[in-house]
Amino acid sequence: MLANAISYAARAHGGQWRKDKQTPYFAHPVRVMTIVCREFGVSDENILSAAVLHDIIEDTTRDYENISFHFGTEVADLVACLSKDPRLPEAERERKYDEQLEQGPWEARLIKLADCQDNFTDAINDDMQTRAKEKALRALALIQETDPEDVQRAGKILQQTLDQKTR
Image 1 (cartoon, one colour):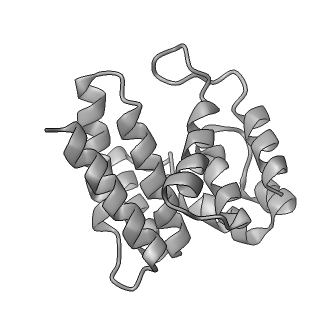
Image 2 (cartoon, one colour; image 1 turned 90 degrees about the vertical axis):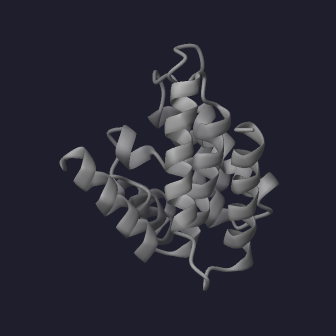
Image 3 (cartoon, helix red, strand yellow; image 1 turned 45 degrees about the horizontal axis):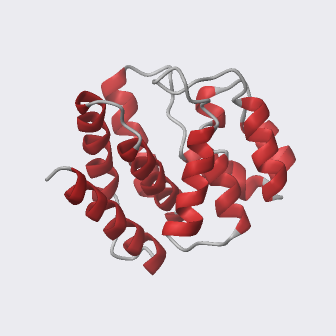
């Protein structure tokens, strides 16, 4: 399933670029998946598939039903939890997004921490790094005491990255 998710994400994000206008956007979801696996130590195929697909609903023409058909409802539910509602005004959209992550499954919070780790380390200027740090701090605040060790460890890794890079 993971190989199919990687190919699916590559096709869905085809033609999209990161803010530097040089890096294909697809590099970001692959790095997020790699962070979940290598840095956070998670090998669950559903979590890794959701990590590489995490921006599909928000940034492509693919939807929940399509992801569910190809990868099952567990993966689709995680991707949906990681997707903002673009119809809402920005402040409300961000507030609702934080709420859905907080109320959602721990796996979504884990993937969000990896997303923040990548966005922070990939920031190309101070302004982008400042915005990425603010989002990372919001994500860290969503970690719950009842979240498993995988999430707790991921939060510590992200916090260490923020501390080291902003000294």
